[in-house]
Amino acid sequence: MAFQKVLIANRGEIALRVIRACRELGLRTVAVHSTADEQALHVRLADEAVCIGPPPATDSYLNIPQLIAAAEVTGAEAVHPGYGFLSENAEFAEICAQCGLTFVGPKPEHMGMWGDKVRARALAKSLGLPLMEGSAVLEDEGHAIQEADRIGYPVMLKASGGGGGRGMKICRNAEQLEAAFPQARAEAVAGFKNPDLFIERFVEEPRHIEFRVLCDGEGGVWVLGERECSIQRRHQKLVEEAPSVAVDDALRRATARTIGKAMRETGYVSAGTLEFLMDETGNLAFLEMNTRIQVEHPVTEEITGVDLVMEQLRIARGEGASLEPMEDDLVPLEGWAIEVRVNAEDPETFAPWPGLIEELHVPGGPGVRVDGGIYAGFRVPGAYDSLLMKIIAMGPDRATALRRLQRAVDETLLVGIRTNLPLHRRILAHPDFASGALSTRFLSRLD
Amino acid sequence: MEIDLDQLRELMTALQEFDVDELELERGDEKILMRRGGAAGTVMAAPYPMAAGPATIAAPAPAPGPSVAPEPEGDYITSPFVGTFYRSPKPDAASFVDAGQDFATGQTLCIVEAMKLMNEIEAEFAGTVLEVLVDNGKPVEYGDRLFRVEKK
Image 1 (cartoon, rainbow over the protein chains, first blue to last red):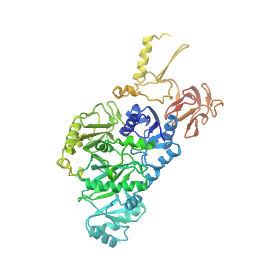
Image 2: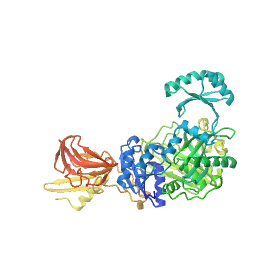
Image 3: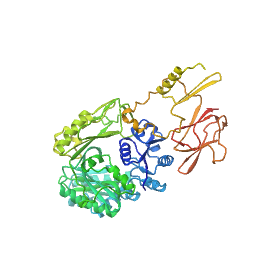
């Protein structure tokens, strides 16, 4: 339990983030890397580093036997999975346990129960989490129209076996629904080998709101407020902030109570995030739970003063969280934090842009935090995701945080590859962003 | 040998500059072997000590230039995965192969142990072992050079 050496099964900025937390806790670190990442910062800053395979992630960062072998030869006693890669892979967590390695995260059964969308929805319902109004499995067109009349148009016609935006059709009236139904059924059979269809209320301009939670597995639950991540491109978050202008204290407190109860009932351990869509009238509907640390965790850290990665490590070591019990399980929030994700990509076409970073100046000054994994002279490999660094700005209020973030983005100098910094300048300068009139359609309306 | 200290220094700089790990010079019956960063394959410790701090991180070495400082003669057999390198099937048994010995295609050259599994590493071609590059019982990474060999 009380491990001293942690293997970080990840790369890039999150590997660095974990190394930093370990170092502050006095724990030794082992970095793993592919041959494409020999010069990466996480390799250089960890106490030890092991090359685990060639560039393709399936042969290296996703290669479970190699990760376990790397822990064995270095004597690492725990594994932190970061986000992405194997972070929500229940089998990996299971194998770690079998090999006597502490997995820094939830138990395999938690990943299983929240990982399957259909099961997660049923579970959320039984736990009293709000869901988007929808139908059961539909028999035919007539049944669909009957249900749509009850729910109200527009509705989204969905395939039970679909996911990630596939097998979905927006219907604004009964004729559209009647026409879409047979086509959607044929596609569901062909695409997912499952003819089941259902409808859900469709929200035109939803906000993406998520609640961060930390659990010690012994009844201690802390809800660390919400984040708004409405600025997205193809479900890829670009700008995140905490708290949200759309959540008032009553809603925050009520949601925290529901989440606290749900987490205790399911015996959840470690950090997690419950994602919701918010409709135009401010109602939340549960989407899914992420059973891991998330990219945007720093904005939560900055308004709560809680180091989430350190708390994950403390809980995994059996020490428990360093937090006091809170009323309604809600940790007090102070100030405002906004984050932009700086990606190696063309700001217009979004094409990935790997290559050599010739010059780099990271922003600083009051209220600015940068979590990155790059340096001048580093060649960004093309084999992995394009996240270079996150710039986070804090302030006592949203306006101050926004001005600081704009200032920090302007200060950033990155020469050699294309980044989305110009896009961030446009987003942050937009009057709708300043006023907080956000939705997941924000980016598509930018031009 | 006619090489003096200054020439040696120059050679060492060249090794670093062109990212060459090993250089062997032979003249008559005299020989100089230079190797960077200790024996290849055994470096599991942090390549850059923390004390140095990120500020001292140098740009990656430039790619080796053409026809400069050739690699030592021979081919290399590298580790296909992470694990512990063993030269013999049991602690007291004889080594699978030694320097100077010939080996056939499919012959076991060593063991890399990972997850309690003894993975026998077999030769994909026939040849002669010129040098064993890793000490028995040492951890190896993916791609570490285990043997310098001469193909038949």
